Length: 99
Image (cartoon, rainbow, N blue to C red; front, side):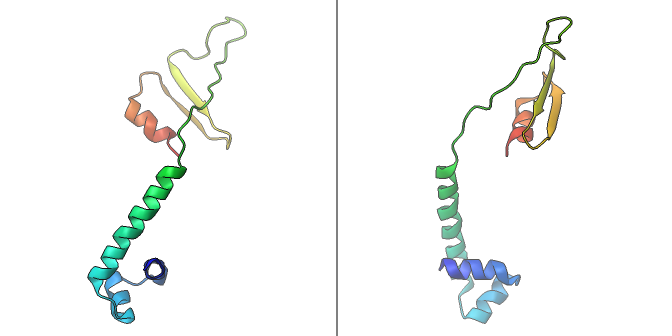
């Protein structure tokens, strides 16, 4: 059944046309799609391991105080930088930092 789901996705045809070409009931394909999504979303959830990301706090050399107080600055290994005010809504921050 998953072979049909993957073949349908790769065919670039609407699902109903794929079903007609393959002699499948559209409702059967929908059921298989549901099972496919459940199977792979559970698998992805098991592979995901949340964890902490180390944060480096830099001090200004002259004042010996935290650089840019009130501002969050995230520098990722791939070079992407995210800067935002310390008061940023946690939902926005989560959206920005979620892979």
